[in-house]
Image 1 (tube, rainbow, N blue to C red):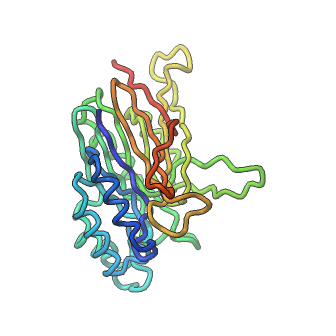
Image 2: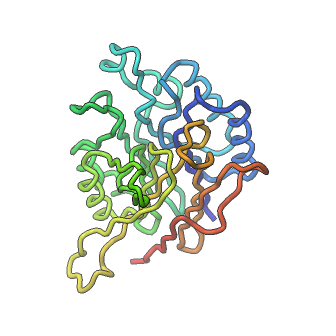
Image 3: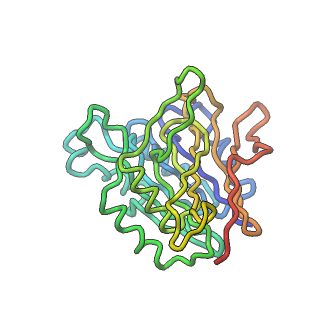
Length: 278
């Protein structure tokens, strides 16, 4: 079985004392094949916060794949923000902002949706460029279609269903619809992200495939959002991360939440995907 842990919005600088060590111990108890960190490793991109993030990653027994979030670009040093926004990220986390990892059953592709600025009042909302979307076919070209294809980004691609009062946030990355159509065309099975500090799953139905005769021929892209793994800004949820399990051509995503007795995996999956063999 392949196991991937998705952590998001760790926000070193706002974590409770001792919680980072608890999470490291949980992840190292039975190390997954990969730990994905989907952005916002820091609270304000300060050097000491990146040092904590680097130490956290270094303490993990599993390999990691990380993409930046909007909080990982400094809001204080405007010269750095506009001339070298990822300087600290590259120093402490990794040179590649869009890394790739694969094994025999899964291929994970990172996308950077964080931006130094946008022509909107709220710069925290992410974006994908047209170039990033156009590059997807070449990025997936070398990856066998038999593997589950997973995309990692920081910002959400599909809205969360609102509650009765409509109070939950409804934020999507810019060019989300174009990106989702491209994901469907490249047979992406799962997109994982964070940013909202909310856990939920949604699905996008791609256009009918060539020579399609019914809706069953459409490729479904499942999106799963992770809550915050360590931050005190929990938005009504416990701290949590997502656990992706792949076995016998089935991918399941489970929420693992922090409780009094430790980290507890939910009994029922957030999402379940069966890989169709061509």
